[in-house]
Length: 348
Ligand code: SAM
Ligand code: SF4
Ligand code: SF4
Image (cartoon, rainbow, N blue to C red; front, side, top):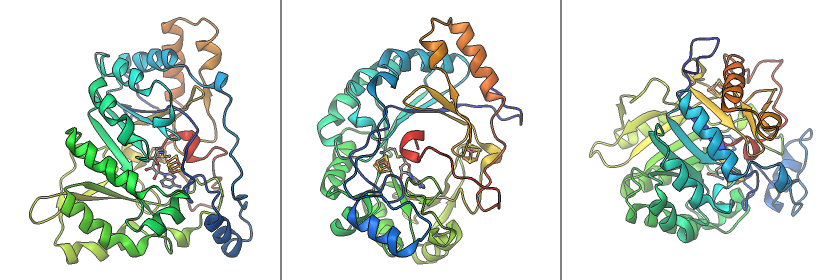
């Protein structure tokens, strides 16, 4: 078992398949004119993203091959990991993603194989992923208004994401989760519309507090709509009742509708941290283990992996890394330093 120095047993591995993405979400990888204007006018200290400038992607030879990912996941699972979530960047940009899903789904010990995607390419890839063994998917959907969707994500993609939701339902990938990063002044006016959409469509919505992991480094506390504020707005209006957590490590506080259709979850890592129950590890596309979203240190497995290390040697190294897992994040404290790499590289 993987147990850290604080007694937490790690069961959940997030694997980033690529640092590349076809979207430019303002809270993650901003480069649109709208994002640049917002950053310029609002934050003097922010690094203004140059509109249209391509982020510096990792060269392909530094990215784990599908075989290396499969080997590492097998080793992690042998150490007690049960849940594997494929993410990125945009995981559907990774060539051979269906192949990888098939191989991971076949690994004994993987109890739950899921994916987080922006949903743009799912209409083309969904059937093959389902056939390969994908059972759960989360999509990001920050707005139901095409113009605002484009403003937030930098791309004209709402129609594709809505098509993805329909296909995921047709393929039986339910419950379908939908992630919304809520940013004051950008999409907080859509909380009710998104909630009603989730109810009507029977989706499991997750409103997520904006975290300081954006490439623009423009995060500020007053842009965060707290979980409490979201709940106050929604609970009475929709008669929401608390849903008991299925597991102590669950990040979302979940709320059900009176007729039992759909669900709203609120993930409040900034204002109500849940680090005490954190059971997650992250593997970046370039083979580094991150023990916390906000780690200042990454642990590179590449030298062992490409240096001919045995499975035992790799597992011993993983055990050592896990012991270094941070007890909590320090957002809001004077000494807090945003990690060098952003969410698109870390794997959300
Ligand atoms: N590209 C895929 C997507 O957007 O779903 C997967 C990778 S993305 C990094 C994973 C999740 O991280 C998304 O749900 C996204 O909304 C969330 N995320 C990214 N940046 C964030 C931030 N600064 N604060 C909170 N959540 C963030
Ligand atoms: Fe891409 Fe996902 Fe980041 Fe948006 S949140 S820029 S879709 S990696
Ligand atoms: Fe886990 Fe770090 Fe997130 Fe806390 S901040 S829940 S320790 S990943």
